[in-house]
Image (cartoon, rainbow, N blue to C red; front, side, top):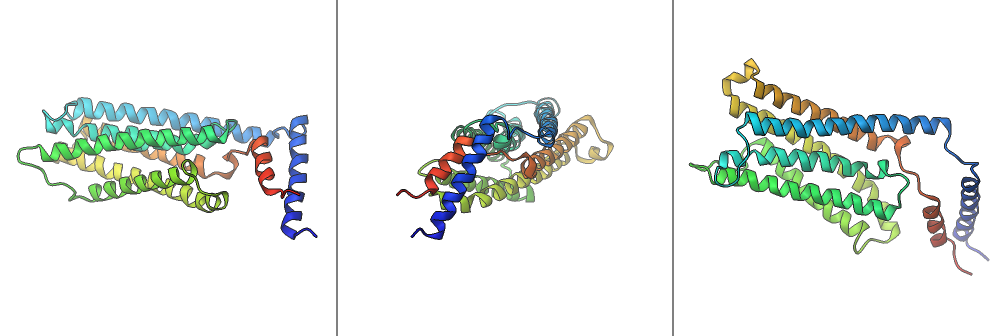
Length: 276
């Protein structure tokens, strides 16, 4: 006599087979509403990417023109400018797009998407390390040295990077190598998604604090008169906010979720149906 779980698995298998059959025959083609939702997604995605590119352009102009340009350890004051540039490039743009991978490439195999998701996070992590190296060097090599980790920006920023590193490690172990069993991956996935968004929001908050702090240090009392450098810095913060809001919206909206491909559904069912 079959167990209730076996019967449930067989019923699910039959229903999924019928669904896959309908997809193959064109009976389960996307509805008008689904096509409309996908159209909305593409519009918001395009706007988010424009905002991301504008943010990179603004931080480049801000650091390159209004904060004196870029250098390395020979000029610690200018070495600092690598910090905001690489943070925006890595922990904002690359990280934000890593969150969108499963929404954008909805017709690609999940294994490929995992590798792309991991690759973008790796880029973000590398850029963040370069940014940290730049800011610590700029403080330590200054004459006299500037204290480290005294502001709320530095506290929140370092906490965010440590959480990002932990999330990066846990995601690699859970989903790539060695990989958890399906039941544990299913339990961990909601936490992975939740903390991914939380850390991204923390990144934007740290950026806001850092931009304001740098403008106040560089412009001093002139800040209240909105000199060009302050305007560019403020616009950068505004673009980062809009970019982040769109990323969170695109990731958190259920209608934009990627649907499993037919072969992925079949594989899941093959794993569920008991052998005779």
